[in-house]
Length: 395
Image (tube, rainbow, N blue to C red):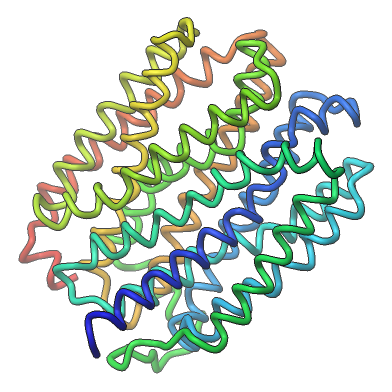
């Protein structure tokens, strides 16, 4: 295989991830608008934006296993085409909480694209370059920034259905291109066992659950803020819906840029040191933000530094997975770890909604994030000590 082919496949996979994540995040920027128009409680509003997250998270387990078996060439178009249905449904039917929850449930399909891309990209690159490659692919999570920057503006200019129609069109175009252009790596390992047995075997690997816990806070924190930050900023700082969405986009961009950097650093320094620094920074910044400082500049700095640390941590975790998971089980391991990351993003919006309803403050929720970051920091240190490079190679 040529180097140019590798990078072409990586580029197409990253675009596919970004497009599907764009769809996955469509409801988040509209959270405040839906809250006002449907008179939702803080918990109901949080539930609307969180449902796609949990479905997209749990769905990564079977999708990762199916990618091991059928490859990204088939699975990327399949996921993209399937996501079009709930996108169009939500654009047409959005006048009740029940409709939003049903549409949001199936919108979660878009979030499973991550479990397609990691094994696909992993197979195209040698072990010593997988951290960087998977980190670049992970930058496709910037699709949430596209949603943040365009959704509210399109609704104001052309009506509620506009962003959903645009996204469905882009998904269809990508699905067609992917079906004709994507190719699986010639050296891709094909599993010989059934899906269920492969998932169970992946769950027994020591690296799987360590990576899952680390990713639950690293990527889970990113997902939580990317779906709940507009609501948080509007409520805590009285920002307009547009200003809140723009600031959320800035948070996403910083995290996206730092994800491949985290993977690159993990290739060179080993994942452990990168994770230890990242989670330490997250803990400190969460405590700072729990005090609800002025956005100019303390709050803004706290959020952007936290975004950088979350992005770097996400990249470093999958550098660990890409380097150490057995080639035939990368999809299954990715599904489990990716599910943990998504589940880590599902709970915080609900907790934040409950906390604010009870206390009229988000401080407790941010303090809980700091505690969680400290716990996984300890896990990262323990992982570095227990899983030496020579042990990881045998995992």
